[in-house]
Image (tube, rainbow, N blue to C red; front, side, top):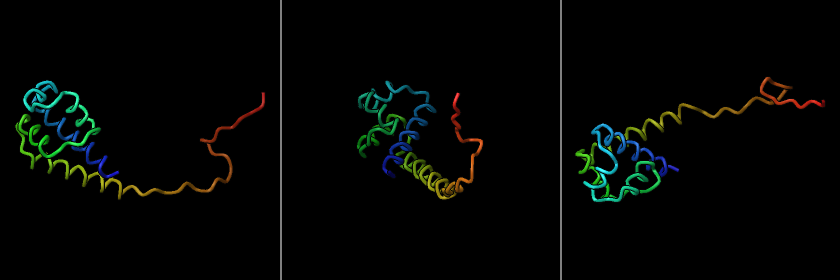
Length: 107
């Protein structure tokens, strides 16, 4: 599950850098020499990016890899803090109908 989270956050950070620079996926694809579809899947967190691919994308975006990884690390830390701060509390035992219950009636 953590890997999926990392992929999604990495895609979010790469997309944010691309948008910040006013670049389209097509422009990044041409500069990085990576297929447009693959970059799109990376940005959506559906594909893993190798270190070589990340290097190409960072070069095309003119952003240091260390900056991208730092941003992803910060985002992971925030997600971890949020999940730790939101304990799962069990619902109280049912003692009757609540306003959220669905009641069927015979017509």
